[in-house]
Image (cartoon, rainbow, N blue to C red; front, side, top):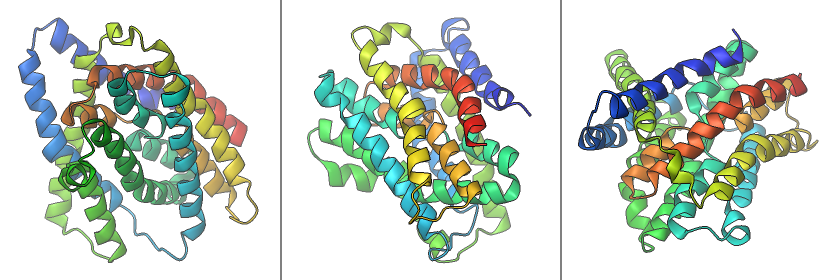
Length: 299
């Protein structure tokens, strides 16, 4: 299946959200309620199940975990440079900096299966399981820092971070979800994925870019251009000893657009969610072209 076809359903959901809000006149209050449901219930279920999808063997996975941490650090540093180079509005920066290093898990897992089969999917699940808590921590830190420095309280109350850490702890402990619980979380997660993207579509407003065009461009460039370059360099480090498949999955992970959960987090923590939705929309659109190019380069 062509990569563009794997991304296309997300565009249909974005378009549906846009139509519901602006053509069918669903109210802003309606979508605010849906956002709370996604933020506190549906996305946590999705993250727990995603992190527990594949068993994590710490010793065998040390190299790819080190590579993932290096890559996330590169993305975070490059995204944070915008604060000093572009001097954006503090709220705009705190909201969008996460777009430079967060990633769309489900596009990544779907493409990993198509490109690398079950083995590729296992590698991508390991990368996702390790990086989700790290990128959520960095994203929550930026928004909590802007809100007045109540970082610890924001962290322990953040449902996205708590759920990913909980799922990772269960995975490392060797726990498995009972069949009915797994099915329950799967259905909640599927609903959260769809509703989260619909909420992004409902919030779309290109007016949100006024005065922030350079910030939007910076974050998109970091995520879709700079991070894949960093992944190529990290994958070539001889002391890591990554296999060709692991290097390919690391590059795919780096090339993914920002996840819709970035919008959910910004909305839930009082950030500029409309500006985040713009970065997500622009990045996802451009990634239809950039992901196949990066994968061809990797091949």
